Image (cartoon, rainbow, N blue to C red):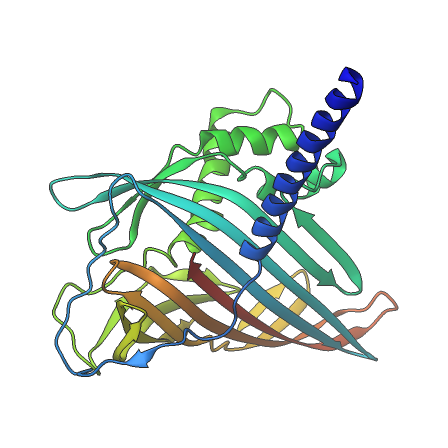
Length: 348
């Protein structure tokens, strides 16, 4: 009888444990599912009142955001025949941010932990998948080291009182994990590590987190108020790119008991530089690219943080090439590429 009772108790505990695991898996699956629809709001009774945008994160409180990026990259090569390539990719991140401190100037210091990443891609017929916690094969982990190295390796960042990321630091664990997954030799120098740290923080983390900490104006706003945030000049192909992010308040809305400011996002882009390039006998003639962006940002004035945003970008690239042919003589070709991206941020 004692053995039967013990078996029944063990079975009960096992079922309970499995149930908890199932619930945890279902909860994570739900959190990784992106909501592409707009927030359901109702107009404010008086949408023309003045207001100010202030970040009001509570010290010690953890906020979870879902950040998703969807990209379609279609490229066409036209020479003797036409070859088309298509790459589609979706990446979803779950990021937990905690406000640790605010200095006398209002600069905020946060810790950030990326707890989950889900990546799916279709590259010219080849299917690629990665999910943190599920992808276990060492070869796959090496392939997806840029994602796996971020998981549960907490880092820090400093944010200005009006938003805008000032610094990302304490990312050494991410760098060490990346090198471990890549099976890097012990001869990696400190200079190489610093280059990798800069690549990760500025090339991967900052573009991701800037969606949470967008720089906002300090002045009082109202419906139809607008402002511009010039960005540092960047290199794009052979061109210099000067981008200015444009914003305009479209109204105030109620979201449950909270008040949201609805902000329209746009982009002004100045492209400069020569359109012609030549190397090793191959001549390239570019058409100037014209990047565009549009979208909507909902700033929660009650909570003092961004509630949701959905911003889409598009870049058209086109150029002709003329160079030596493997069969002798000259070969000409036309390359066109259209890259469409959508970035969706949600406070969970």
